[in-house]
Image 1 (cartoon, rainbow, N blue to C red):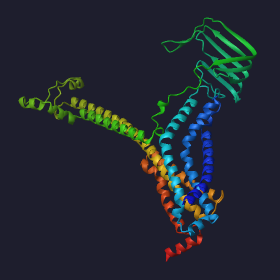
Image 2 (cartoon, rainbow, N blue to C red; image 1 turned 90 degrees about the vertical axis):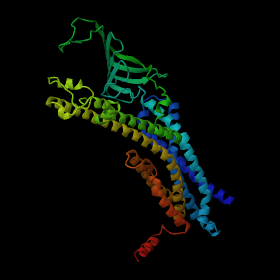
Image 3 (spheres, rainbow, N blue to C red; image 1 turned 90 degrees about the horizontal axis):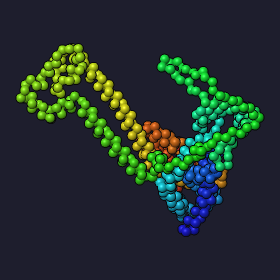
Image 4 (tube, rainbow, N blue to C red; image 1 turned 180 degrees about the horizontal axis):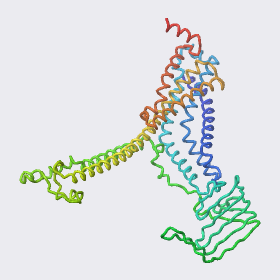
Length: 502
């Protein structure tokens, strides 16, 4: 049995490591392609890029592991079947389940490690690389000049170029407003842009241009009648031409700043299952408390509950002593019916006892109150929807961590029996089969994730959707391989169809 364990693990380890390395390389390249616009032209140091790759790679491992498990299991059992080693093991009295057992134990350990990794390591890695991307995206030196558009990223400057590529530009125009008592305009036909080695100064090498400076200018003022007054008094100005000039802009404060990791801790994918469970409980308590508070506010303003409160305060008892109290409120007719209705005592008033003008005022006030309540209800509905959406996001991540572990086991029980049935090893047919199955798996998890995010289905159903679809397939191919059913033969399916018809 020990020899079987050693033989199975040795046959499985090589394809697994090779496919895992290739999958990680492809996923990292896909990651770079996604964020290439944020990384190019920012002057980012190599150490920052290496750190970004390191943390992003950790977050991509759960996506590479299912593909590696699937492809390596198909290749391993395909090689065993092609070399008749699987037939020899079965002829010695071992069933397919006993042959799969060593690799199943290994895959089970990998699945357990994957859950631990996705629960404790990946949230930290996601937090780190999201922080780095956030810092890079908010670095003010990014894409310093866009041709044809004024750039205002540098405080006190407005920079524009007619055309250009990389760091070479034509038709450069720089408005310098850093001095409050001076307006400087620099124009050049051509120029190039680069940063200093320490990254604190941005240099423009300008050719064939001029500089116009207006000293002590007077700002136009807008008069009360709407006209703009422009003082006509003279102020000094000068113009200087040059064939070559170097213009520099200080980048103090524009370098990439490190964001505090705690600012991004409320992201769903940056928490483990225990933190997610705590966050769900906190949000649920907060939502229930808010609903109770809002319900109490609505009830306190409603006439029915106001009347109940009026009776509880003993005012009904006072009415028994004074029969006229609460029956009718005498309000003199006048022009200011609204004010008189507001100043009326806080007693129950019969609507039929009011005058026509007072009824009109009361109806208008009721309409206004109903419109206010309707508007508040819409706002509260939006607030409650946001709370439920936030809770669904946490539930999606909570179920994702468990569904990923189960998916690895399901894909193994699809790949290993399928490799034994196909009977082909190497990188030919197994690669095609594994690629098609992984495409199906990826489509299923994408569809489930999209439906869960759109709240079309519950979060647990969306995250477990791929497992629910693939589990019957795994059961079918495992049973077929164990009983040597040739499901890859067209004759078998024709016989099965004829049997069903008869």
